[in-house]
Length: 134
Image 1 (cartoon, rainbow, N blue to C red):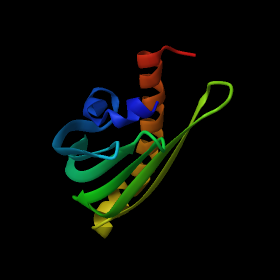
Image 2: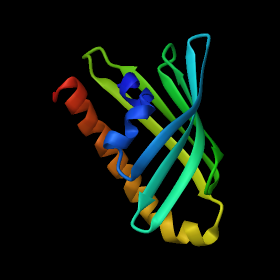
Image 3: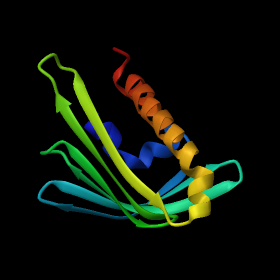
Image 4: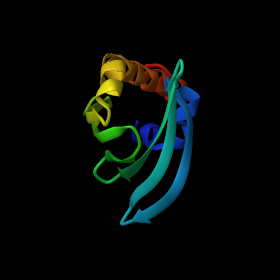
């Protein structure tokens, strides 16, 4: 599951609302792979691109996403992966965000929460495709 989430280049293939993703820079330091990427998202007439720094730490089984530029005042999220003795992988996802514009917040706020539920479902479906359904 860590590899599936860390493969941000594949997001346009399966993540709802993700129209495109471009890697600006990729570095590796002490096993941590960091990518700076522009993600374009859209829904109906609304289109936005934002830039994030994605740090993938396989030793800690964590992925930390830090917002750089775009329509948010602040955005960060963290993925944590814990394998259980049964072989099941428990995935924890935390996100904190605030839009720059109050108008955009009012327009997108409720939809944004719904979209994150859809994102979660998309990752589960993608895992079924890549690894086989349980």
